Amino acid sequence: MNVRAWVSSRFLTFFVSWAVFQSYWGLWLADRGFSVSEIGTAVACSLVARAVTVAMIYPALNRRATLLLLSRTVPWVITVVAVPYLFVVGFPLLIAVSIAFGLVYPIMLPLNETVATVAARQRLLPYGPTRALGSAGFILGTLVAGWLTAALGAPVLAYSLIGSCVLMALVGFIHPREEAALAVRGSGRQGFAALAHDRSFLACLAIAVLVQGSPAAYYGFGAIRAAEIATPLAVPFLLVIAPLSELILFFLARRRFENLGYRTLFAVGAVVAAVRWILLATSDDWPLFAASQILHAGSYATTHIAFMLYVRDHVDLESQAAAQGLYASFAMGLGTAVLTFVAGVQIGASFATALLTMAVAALASLLFLPVLGADPRRVLAAHARARLTAWPISSSPSSATIAPDS
Image (cartoon, rainbow, N blue to C red; front, side, top):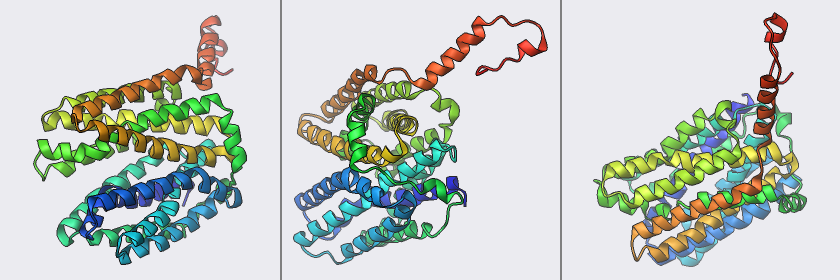
């Protein structure tokens, strides 16, 4: 299949498994008899392992193997380390399996994004519509796993996770038509060194950490709040509104949307995130909760696209693995973990207080916008428009058809 269809299938199958793991894994562990504190410790160990692997291990692997080879082999390794979950008995074994899984499974997050941005840079696919299949996979995984759990009980979740990992691995047998475009190796530690001296990249990363970490209070306590203001049957539908809105925005994020520039998209993401948390903090009924969920598209998805645009256009191909690893580690991992701790401390006062703190964190990201400077694409477009305005256009056919870039 062509690269666009192949990358879309990678996103789709991975996020089916991600939905099972992120949305229901605590339920499966509780069904296995583990206490709340044991589950929290296991999740924390997995998050720490995730931060290490996406920031350090993944870029090191990409230095030794191409993106295409990693895309084909890593899913099989994930499947192998997932199988021991079926035999977990006792807390020590749970910790060992959680760390092993946390060291391998999260590699797919930056790996898929790197493949997508590399292919987008070579004009082989539009990033937004391709990434939309990931959101579709998350919705599909959330609904199917929920239905299976309701019908067969929590034990089915482990088999659902392993089965979805096998499906992800089987997709690797399919060959993308433009294989040579994905035969890219990373620069490893050299990529980190280059990015560490790029003030614009560091500013992008800081904005992403604050905006993408701001859902911490929602991730930890949003389902509980939804259950307080809606019937049990309505809760899953309220929760699925967020990824559904994300899917729609990714699908619509074609060239005109991307031409807004990453600075504008970062600003929109920060402001919409703040509005979302303020709205959720003041919502006492399900319509307001649902409205706040729709804003997920304008906060998370917009910020995600902005970061991917910057990486696609301003980070060398050899350093993109390092850039994606840092994004997955800090913006999608450690940043959320720190703000989750902050939200957990404040939740004792009120859920609204924690959400308002998240709104402040999102708005604080705007302080880094001046460091980014002007988006080169928008500068070039402005210069082209200025030239058109300055040039006198006569009624002759030849002068009336001057192109903006001529």
